[in-house]
Image 1 (cartoon, rainbow, N blue to C red):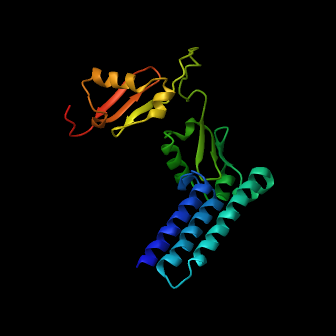
Image 2: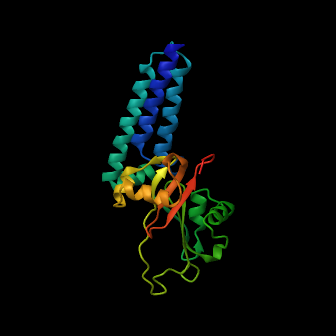
Image 3: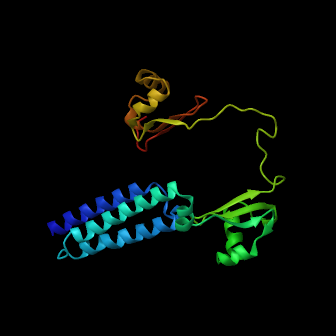
Amino acid sequence: MAIAFIRTIILYLLVICAMRIMGKRQIGELQPSELVVAIMISDLATVPVSDIAIPLLSGVIPIMTLIVFEVSISFLTLKSERARNIITGKPTYIIKDGIIAEKHMRDMRYNIEDLLEELRLKDCPNIADVHTAILETNGELSVVLKSNKRAVTPEDLKINPKQENVPLVLISDGKIRFNHLKDLNKDIKWLNQKLADRNIKNTADVFLFSVDSDGIITMQIRDGAKN
């Protein structure tokens, strides 16, 4: 039992490392070659886990081989456009200049219902509003609306708004993020004062405390806090 437990943990950590090496893409954003490698790694990992009579190396070596192969392929596609086109394919126009490319849709086995569904998911229920739609190599549909249908931007109105930054979380689940305090050019004394202004004596009572680019504080107290 202990051997099976240890083997499972080792293979689990190995698969996690493999996924990290492949990058941070979500499953729906994987290229075909990456998806194949991910499926093969998961299958190879289950074999030594389900049968302890099989040597652990019988699962480790094929997984390591796939990792090396995938990294090599990624490096090759990075350096060679021809290799990239062969392995990952090319983006395909589904709609160009407002006209549906029927031949391309047939080649991609992409029907009208598929197209309309993807457009709805892109908040574009009316196909007449679309100028360009491109089926990317990972299966995602990129949509460009006609110029008179797109949302108005500050640039259109000759407005130059202040650049917004991502709000910094200073307290998360009762724990202080000192690196974010440093990014904000603030110290623990400033944070404690802000908490004291709100009658909070203990940071452990704070579930969330964040500050946006305008200095506006968003805070939520933990459930069951005394304050």
